[in-house]
Length: 231
Length: 359
Image 1 (spheres, rainbow over the protein chains, first blue to last red):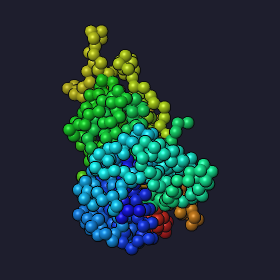
Image 2: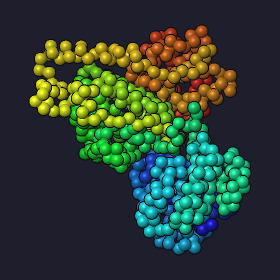
Image 3: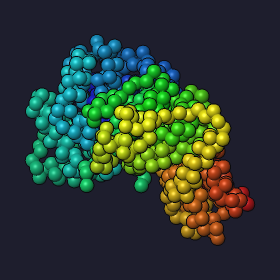
Image 4: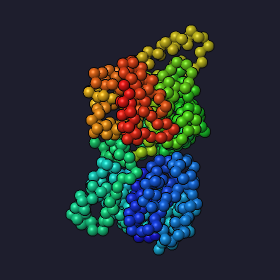
């Protein structure tokens, strides 16, 4: 685990949900924890929407300069982001905007990210998103984000899901895609996310199929209001 | 059955249009619908279509006029202030009876407003902001899957009625993700098929027929009156045949919510919370906003229902259609938020109980 974790990926792959889960987990182990909402591409479902919730837990959150105003449309982020990047006492999760266009914002802070002992960039992959459903599509996003930022992706996060319709088969399918990516690029699979209620079933499948390297990362859906999944 | 994919609303709207045989898209970016032109700029040419980023929303809707006049299936999308800019040409399209599908991914208004979800264009889409006698057919999905299905239907209705059809979506539907299935793709009409299926289209007379003219100017008022009276029955037919809605738990309900779009899903959660407290609430969810589904209100259980509540993200716009449909048989109240604020299920519960206290 590096001090700074950059979460990148195709838009809609689940970067924000993972980032919010990750920073909450970090807070259980570390005193000073910050999340940087660097999403300047997307107007909705950004981690800043959970500002009060995160701050109540003692997690620092930085986004634009407008405090609680989540509706600001300016593609701008606050220089306050530098504080936890500078301060080595902080564990930092950067929730970056989608695609290479969203990752471009990392360049202005690049001096904090080049030390590989202090920082790593992880890419979120959801095999149920049409653009990253196959090896070619997933590799395209890895290459374009690396080219945009000049940073190397150091790990894959298999975040394959269909929201509340997710089945273990989906997660395993995504794991197989990530194995293919891994073979092609040498990038390891850091985590395989799984909604909490499916964890026992995934553990069982993991044991049965001998997927010893799979690191299961339980996820809570903090970003999605319950009424969105009402039929 | 085709495989489910996780799609963002705006991507799915664009994909559904291509799937329905749309080959022409003219757009201008505006939050919260910019993923539609982004998707179209990448994908439409792969389907053999044409994408143009217009210089403005005015440019876009008038390009749509041209492409539709030539017999193509055309999609236009924008968000509230952008749709406001297009009003003149929506009336123009109605006057010359050209089919175009228009998606309004509504946000907070009036004016430039906010970029969060809204429904305050209800009057804009159902009454229209152009001049003269016309209607636009308005469909209101409450999920991405329903939007995909309605977009396919909208292209068919637009062609059948030779009239613009508006999909009243909102920022939440445009930006949220859902697992969806795309229906089987439909082929676009070929150049040979267009003159047969759309005999009005400007395809070139090739010295074999009289020229076609698509023109909105009438210098003899008697002829214009005749023309309007000729096409007007299609709107009466639409009012008879196109009303569409979903109703839930109307039998024995004390209160009936009327809600469409994303708001209907928030209302559904509030209904269950109220049911847990022993308060029986029904729902009428208009799937067509024009024609408004007045027939749905005949299903209300007038023995038990004491209140009708219009639940909207606007300052009480749909409520007037609800009142007309209820015909003064019951009091109609409003639960709303505006400006880009969403209702919370708990807020609907609390406000419903307050309304029920009033005798």
